[in-house]
Length: 176
Image (cartoon, rainbow, N blue to C red; front, side):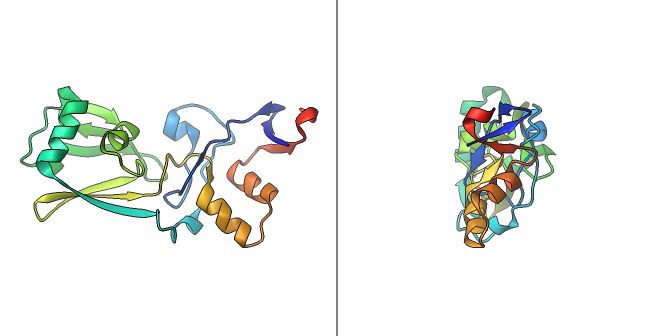
């Protein structure tokens, strides 16, 4: 069996744990993927990977970001004020982040710092930068944790797939 839309296989993106709801492909990637819509996945909240809090020294944060994005020209002093999320999607994931003189994607910021997701929030706390992330992964498509929780509640694979990949059809491979 495969998931299809209008007779063609879908892009069945998945991630470990959502930030409470999944993301749309239009918002996250600026591409149209009708099966990658935003659905509530609040069952992810109890996951041990739902929230992660890290602390990073201001000079270390500035060094990492300046090395990856040399045009940013970040200074250690007042670093949190030099970083701002300019745009978020409906799932609260950062789409556009201003770091000093550079504008980068939330995913680029996440990857540079090795964060669990692009759904992050920064704050200076006791001389360091606290970064809180929600979810684990890009947030598109099926949440593996959410699917597991649905299965524990008695949902079968068809219900789970049709919940996370809305508009998709499950067909036998030789029927498409």
